Image 1 (cartoon, rainbow, N blue to C red):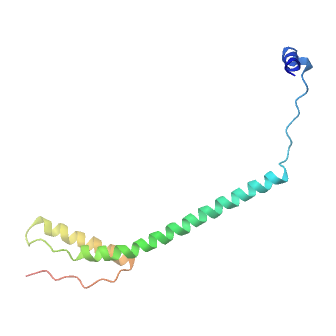
Image 2 (cartoon, rainbow, N blue to C red; image 1 turned 30 degrees about the vertical axis):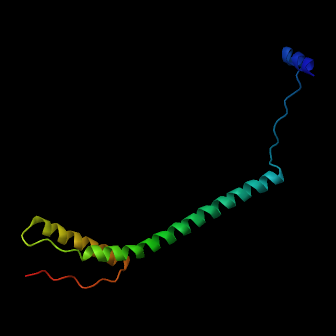
Image 3 (cartoon, one colour; image 1 turned 180 degrees about the horizontal axis):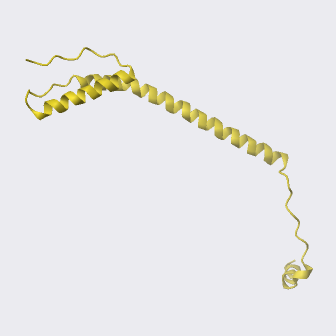
Length: 111
């Protein structure tokens, strides 16, 4: 067999004609490709649903953290940190309202 191959390689005119690939997929390959595309979309959809579920659960967990951060002690009057603490508390309250967290009334400034 190797002698026949060597002769064909040596004389390209004697090589058998190259046949073109078939134009169509076989039914088995077609079904496999369709199945893989559908599987891909199902896995992608499941990933989106799971991510949404985890994100929504995380929002409720954040409510407790925001509640604790909102009620941190405020620095003494007259310090620059007091302005920063008030701004930070306002930002935390705004985020808590966006998440729909139940909040206690704002604290009163000491006299």
